[in-house]
Image 1 (cartoon, rainbow, N blue to C red):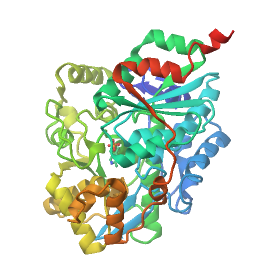
Image 2: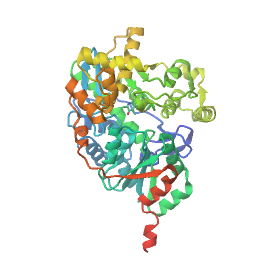
Image 3: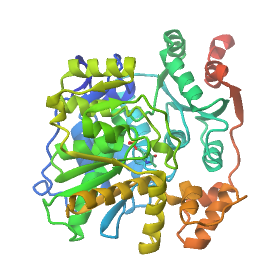
Image 4: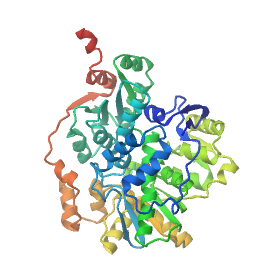
Length: 500
Ligand SMILES: *Cc1c(COP(=O)(O)O)cnc(C)c1O
């Protein structure tokens, strides 16, 4: 399969090359030029395990990987780091099905892709014959950093460096990162905010001279950002898997349609669902759920994307985003893969923070329904599901559930529906306790989780319980101007020469 930049179809890459590069050299996103077709009934998928189904789907996208390479990647990701048989469980409450994508090592759905990406990267290097160490560089406001550390820890031929704002992540998130094991992991806190960290990383990526210097030392910089095609494709798998589970459990007729409700930030998870639909998954509506940062809701209604607004800090921080990067791949599809159009739209976004798509493209928005939840509605969704079904959801999942209820009210659509649950309620226990009106004044994050457990008896994920007793292994704190020099120190740049 060939991938091309969304902004220039002459810029193409093999799957391995696209995974290594992450982003195309012109700033576009590598996208497949055609989509494999899957016949949900005829292909005989119904009894496949998660891993076998993952191979069936991913082999159609990563065509330059051998069967043994790809199965090994899949096995390393989903057998060791998840509980077998419970990789992406589906549970039914209140007439909907919740697809729980938070049973990986860091308790959020980013694990579904970040557990496999490192293995894909490592294979891709050998396929391309590149004899270098990959350095994964990430700025994080909490979730992605830990998931990247956990995914890349002890993976041969990789180093992972995470920068986080010293005062911009929760106590639990900080501990999750500072206790990370693995000799190839590096965690650095900076005196600054998330934007400072992000800017520093972008500057490092843009520095051609640094890239050359690192290359001479055998290093290649890359990112674990969600625009990497190696993160997107693994996310297609669980949509097919959950559909087949419903059929097997006799909750859905084979070939019957479903709705998918997805709490959305960067548009990655929902784009994977859109790809699944293009490949033949019987989907009626893709329901795009936003929090108060509702740029996408407006876009899906009007065809105008306008990021000129203030970023609201909500209780679903992983969706506090004004520029949804992966939307670019969707625009590429609804323009019939017209890279000229995408290039212009993205130039407009860059210059004015805004663009409007053509009437022809607007006519292709019909697969989607978009809406958003206010903070008060998120709280109601959490307390309602708990009180009526004894089911605990986190703030991100609550955004989706509350949007689904609006959709139902508006449309009376009776199609069976899957709500995607993207984080463990214990990852956001403070907000969950607030929604349930449990007293938490003066309690630290661990005590708040304990409070949530005592009240609900909802099982505490093992990774979280263990965290309290883990050793702090990282203690580097720097000023934001020192990011590049710290990177060089961590990679011991120059020292090899000095020794000679
Ligand atoms: C990243 C994230 C999302 C948003 O997913 P996108 O692919 O960015 O749209 C939703 N919920 C949680 C918990 C996340 O970590």
